[in-house]
Amino acid sequence: DGTTGLTQLKETTFDLVIADWNMKEMSGLELLNEMRADSTLEDIPFMLVTGEEDQEIIMKAIKAGINAFMTKPYVAKVLSDKIERILAFQEEIKNRDQ
Image (tube, rainbow, N blue to C red; front, side, top):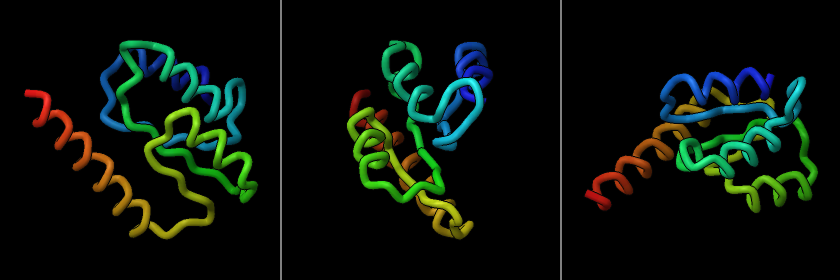
């Protein structure tokens, strides 16, 4: 659930968060908003996964600052490719800032 995820994010270092839109306690969008509002978590890449196909949901997630979006069901190769692209982009930003 999103509440447990947020607690773990504050206690441990993560390179990427992949969360579902529909989670107990705190939705994926709420988790993202909490992360983007926290200076220690705001730069962690965030992929939102959902079975919803509503364009409004996608727009809310984009405005909130997702790095990637996937609809379910998904293919493992597509997921893997998106993860690789997100992490490569983060590495590029990190190298640029040094």
